[in-house]
Length: 139
Image (tube, rainbow, N blue to C red; front, top):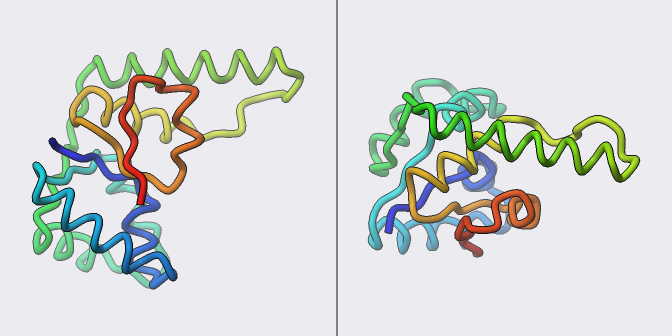
């Protein structure tokens, strides 16, 4: 079972947050169960991590065997668009105004849904409503 990773998983690991050791252990388990992957938008977000260099990102991904899928096909983009549109419509109907979540979150989830077996994220609740069929990994 291949596991896609949300940006916040690697950010938590690199920032030495208290849950970093739990993240590290879980990543080892998931890697052994079928491998780890990130999509291009996660790669982009990782570069913005404070105190992390582009060389560090590339070296870390290579050393840990985390695959990067830079090319996302039409199915991923269409799924992300459909789910983001539904989210924005729900938000407007509820009186919440314009969308507050970033479209990149929908691309990450659509990639996980179509190109992996599950998504590991620290924001599972944000994904449950918009991607009800996506298997989410908890710590």
